[in-house]
Length: 477
Image (tube, rainbow, N blue to C red; front, side, top):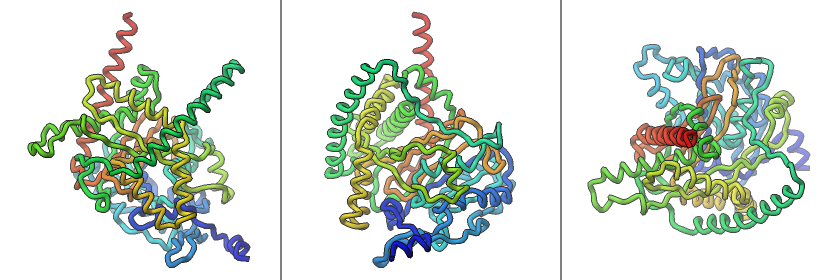
């Protein structure tokens, strides 16, 4: 009878991970900054949202968190789009628009969100910066879905610039073609053996880390976990072609190069900090630094953009939400003369993680924890996982062709998350021929985020120069 009443009213139970991301201390938000090539028309965005996003069940429902012993649930409601679109008055003569955008985005994290409405809002900023003519800054509560799902949903609301009637396409992983049945069988058996071995080792290491102490204090982690709070978001747009030059020279993936770039940048930043340290007790060597990063893995099968567009058109209630796993990766913090060593180390560890069930294990572990021991135990476990690492690292591939959102041509995407107990979150997105580095930092720990970002960009340029020299030497052989 209770189930029948729930089905009639349209109420939907809240998933364990949506509950996790709405708990005190882990009240998480996805922040997406979309640079536009022309001045934004607020009316066009309001009409566009009425025909797309609000038709999605999660974006037209109120979250009842279940405080006081009640069951958490999504309650459908009527959405007035105008209440979710904010158009602030901005001084057209502002001296530093790039700084204003950073401050505005950072302040959005701390502004309260009205829990009596669906948990999303969009801010339209008509101001020109060095990268775009205007901006759409969106804030989504993490209970609505994970970053990959939300990115895919936004893309499903857009259309190809070259063909306004066609949906965009996301970069899909290439599948190898089977040419020999026997060789294919041997490869499958070998894959299963590697999967079992890697899973055993990685899950054992995962549990060992959970039982160990947190990362040692460094300039990236100098506050107790309970006091960490991201309060500054910055982003930098760089060339995807530079990444591909390194990728092709090393015969690796874009993701390998990105992780290698982050490791090299962090190493350079820490090395400089230690070299400038005057207190001998605090002066350390990179050789003695051991840091870990939490990396998100998307566990949902690749959903086609067409399916998401149809979901909004038909108000479908198909599977949606947070479907992500986590892995712990050791960061290679060394002063390497060979800049490619950071990429090789990244490839070695990421290949091992990909061919393991550690992401699925972490997902199941969190799910079983909340089902058996309750929400409080889930929060404690999540805090322990994130408390055993220094940074969160995420990489999402965006559209490979130019797209327009409600007839506004997009220049770039930048995305990040807030609410996690880390002093540094590195989120990388790609769009057409651009890579966007987004850093979320606690300024009390990392007071110079632009300097840290400079080190990452400089590391990529060093890799590019080395790759070009390598290709030139190979041609001369």
